[in-house]
Image (cartoon, rainbow, N blue to C red):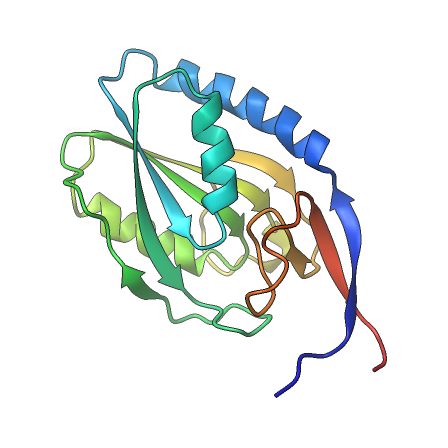
Length: 180
């Protein structure tokens, strides 16, 4: 089935994202000062660009791992069912863990992943999200650090996709559908 026609309106520039990540990295370093090694867990696929830029800004020793969780598929709205498609490789018991999410929308994905990780008994478990869309929240969850508040619009870019398109945009944009 062909995708509907749409345009992307720029919402957050690449320069603004980079500046915010620098600030977030400083706050994370202060929180985790003295840690032996911070395990940075990216939620695939949308967080991969954010996590890459974030860990490059951190002067802490880090280990990177990934969880792939899905609640969207190719849809524009999150489902309530969260599936784990790829689990972590390492042991999290007794370790400092930072979960990196691209966007907290309904909150179901982040809540599910945090429940999974808490069961593995990390020493500390913190979260960071590039975007937060609290107007759509269906769970009582919020990230410890937020890059930007997001309007109630479908967004793409900087790792975030629409039907596997537009991930490579260096900025965040809103999708506006047009008549074909």
